[in-house]
Length: 219
Length: 332
Image 1 (cartoon, rainbow over the protein chains, first blue to last red):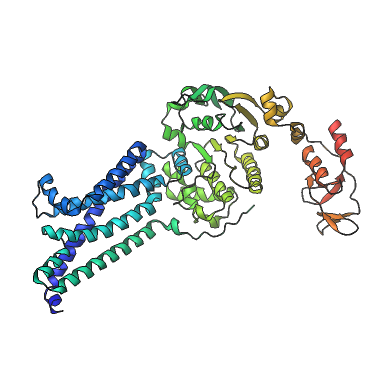
Image 2: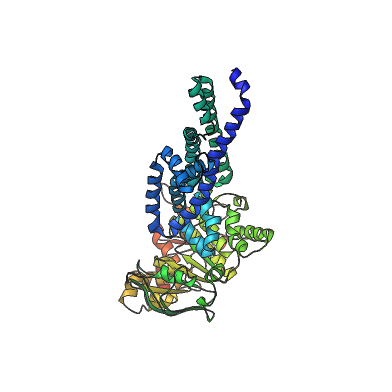
């Protein structure tokens, strides 16, 4: 317990780094996946290859990616950019499927009437397709957010890993407290992030949870 | 007036959906495209707002080629209603209706006021304004679809099988209300259906299309029933077209017999049933004064004792007709 009291500054620092390393890739990944998914629904032959490619990317071991990226990007081995890029790749590889599925979940008659009332194609994406795709996209966002939070710790092996560095510290000193603190905070972070996403989704989709009151046919 | 001149739609695989179609759709009337599946009726409709682009030929609205302006601008000036309504599930009823006014850049308050007026106009309670489409019945959704199409007051409204997914009773109500609405608004309506009865009921003009996208006949319904141009049209309008043609026969004054003692009336004078030895049998069908001969004949045929009850505008029984009276009217 005294260790925790003495190292609050360090724990706080690692927590902040952890959060940054996990969430920034989610945001970047979303910004990349949406246009990519949109292109894939316009040129439908692209969709399945993209989803398959995403699957392959996701199966790359994270450790290998963390180590290979500096050589490809020309970054320093200890640069946080490596982690951010690697996790962004994972985010896109998972999220691309949800974005494509989400955009495909727009009912044909809704799309047809959106065109017929006079939405231009980009306007339609923003005003009609994306809002309707929110539940499916958010399902993916929740998965990648939690996955990223757990994966950041792996970065500790190459020296940048947020709360993961507490694990390294604990193992090196053969001292359990930092490890327990690291695990507990990772779990807490994942839980809070997930709750925030659930809340955000509820705010964005009031229409998706309307009570289906039995409609009354009026003459 | 919307005019098709030698309009053809051929898909890349070679299928011809519409074949050198030429026809005129008069303004301020309902023109129905009807035909079996594969006759190109929906394709023809959707070429008007360019959600399907024709391969060749010319389509013009009041003499102006529809390709002379931007497709998006064209569509905002043409109302559109489809099967299942196609409402935006994430927008409330009032926002759905206000879609086109907002796209046209109206200020919010005006768009909303117009939307609320239309909600009432299509026979919906204003309390439904803040609901989402999933909270409405199929019939209510379809009314919202009509309101959305009318929101920016376009001169033309395209309706693609709008009532085919609702049950027959609601469909009948929606048809009646469309006719009532049309009497007020006088839009140029192009209506697609596969149901010849619906076509005859709603259309000022009916265009019958045959498979392969060729026009078989374009005429007012009474003309179609009386003088079908060929066997295809004759078959399509059906065997009982003689009976259906009675819809257009309105005998000025069908002579009625006085009400018999067996007819049970309620306090307001509306017919309730026929008294027999043991029970009161319901009056199955009545017809209103001024209704078509078809309605009168139908009342006679469905009555338990062969007497059809004639009611006035207030629903009060004024007399009865029997087969002899109807047959007499048929002969003349």
